[in-house]
Length: 317
Image 1 (cartoon, helix red, strand yellow):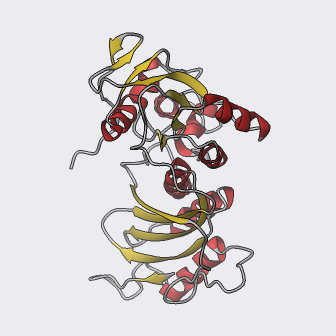
Image 2 (image 1 turned 60 degrees about the vertical axis):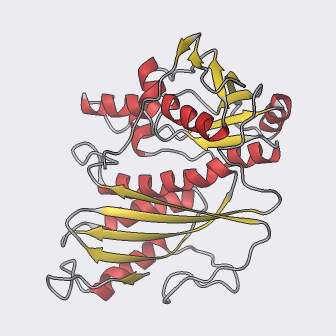
């Protein structure tokens, strides 16, 4: 992990000695075991052993105040969520996490320790060690998280390969994160299960790898809401869909399940539901929930026979 000098301000950058900050952060995020031949934090760049199969890489940027509300959540929560949501992109491809690098921008005086304690918690939970990163001063607190994964035995699952007359599944009830944000704003405590779903998402890594082993056609994570993400998958695959149901989490509304976003459950399309369900049961994982089918007519996009328009979270750029 290195540090980029600020373009202005004091030489210390964050109000502390730069080397002291870096040493403290390194102690927090360093993996307890580093495989032989690899170099993680401490050098100019990380060194990872070569992999067999496909390498999967994704980058997410999280901004304090945009991706998590500072009125109701902590910087620890922010660090955790930034890593967990980035790792969810690996789950969506059926990949196994290998490593991540974190670039942090923050104003002078920001509690970098709390942020990196959250980062370390998520890295440990997802088995995705932090192998390097960067620090810089800036006006806003933001985390750029790049994750690296691998699919050693088969190719990653794309969102663009769904075919007509296939079965559409999700890995769990939807709307939990959106309901959690609503409840937190209404005064619910941090111990509330739905509030935890908002700030402590759990990437469906095992379920993603099982789906890949089941040779599913297409997959993506539900980060922006089912109504938006399913339409995106259908657009890229050139298919339509007919949904029979949407599984709504207890305490959430149907609209939160459709457009609330940030559930990070997996959306899966497969021609062979029996294999998917069998492997999930055999591995004691979440049983995917059947919600509908893909259809040949590109313009058909329905829920219980009514049009399901794209809606959900999108940045205004």
